[in-house]
Image (cartoon, rainbow, N blue to C red):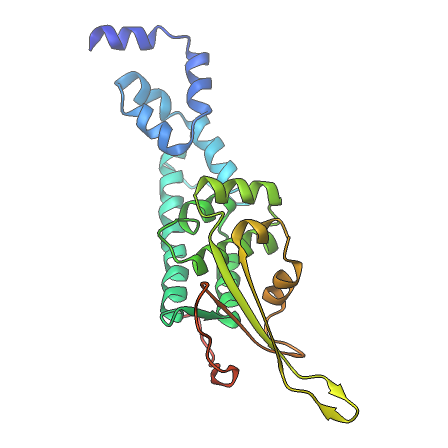
Length: 243
């Protein structure tokens, strides 16, 4: 152990710091558990300040007298974001017990994420999980596109990294029937099954427009589900509220 400590501490500090600074949080923590030398170096304020500002670039970090270092601040902020995201996760799960989600609920969830100021890395860590229902993945994806304005390439890379890029959602919407020679035609229904990656790359612009606008004007209802779900008649639509 003493020989190992000597070997690691003999590494030039600037090189060791550069190595540690290039790591993701999980890998940085794992490296810090290797020895006392790496533990002290991986806990450096300069590393954790950089990680904090990368993850939450718009966060107003007002440091008070009780500030105990950037690592502690990062952990505290992370735990707060986990709690915030859990509220949205619970809301979406409760509203999609039947296997589908109304667009009003979908948009309320996205609005809630915006008010909670979740960043792109928060979405990757907390909403792009393969264990989550694809409807939750879609909420995170739509939030990244419309609220965070994340470039499509970055979103696709994140989806691939989380192994959910090929996951599919089915979006169905009902439109008011058009008038023809004084008579109103039957209401129209449209349906698309698309992958999250295709949505991120805007390959289905009509679906994105429908999701963004929701049930307004000529669109009577928009329902989001997993492929194979049997929809209910549009007139059974209810209203949901995010507590």
